[in-house]
Image: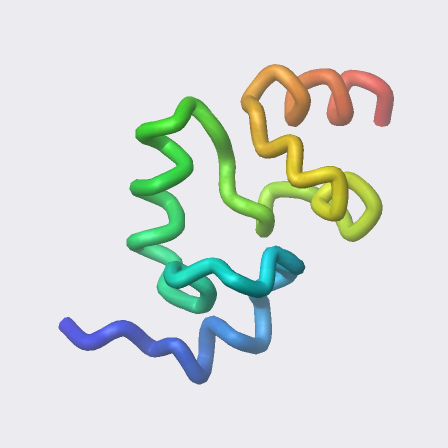
Length: 65
């Protein structure tokens, strides 16, 4: 199956420009999962810009909501 990077571009909120996995959701998810993180799309705009993709940060943010 070929990656639909054009379609993914519409939903990707990652601001990390040099990322080679940008718009490649499967690669992005696997990369972050290996690092005990979540991809940018799990975070809101303000929190995504901190580049703290840790699961504990995600839980902390969503407990406060």
